[in-house]
Amino acid sequence: MKTIAITKNLEVMLPKMGIMTHLVELTRHDYIYVKDRLKINDILSIESDNSRFWEQNSLAIFYKGFKLGYLNSSINNVVQKMINKFGDVHITLKNKPIGNNPFEGVDILIQIG
Image 1 (cartoon, rainbow, N blue to C red):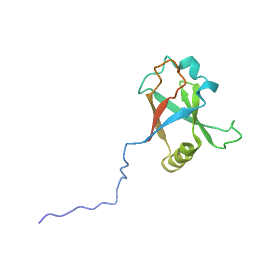
Image 2 (cartoon, rainbow, N blue to C red):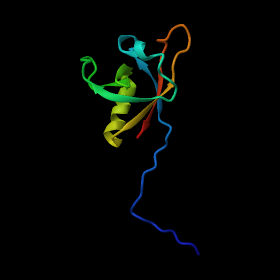
Image 3 (cartoon, rainbow, N blue to C red):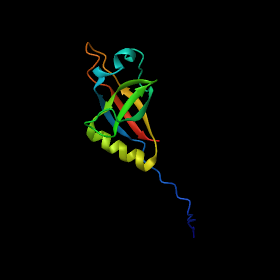
Image 4 (tube, helix red, strand yellow):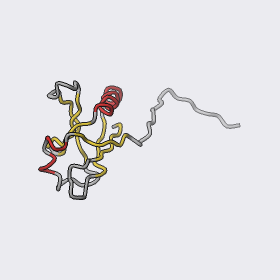
């Protein structure tokens, strides 16, 4: 007969799928200066930005100190909850436009840290 050992040290395992989304307001910030340096799977950072008075607790996405844009408002709310609950998120560049219009959209992957 086999026995099962039960411990109180249970670690919650969360899926590594994450949230795939795109950035908004690329034309208003530093994206134009770094668009050619960005590569797929580059690590990006996220910061709270209170300069947008119409949307409190906005989350801005940065690449090496350059502001690329913002999360859209619906994804922003979900990511705020993730940060509040788990403390940190990792952001990775997953797609950038290759055609004539470099502002078509930048896709990012947001995962729990």
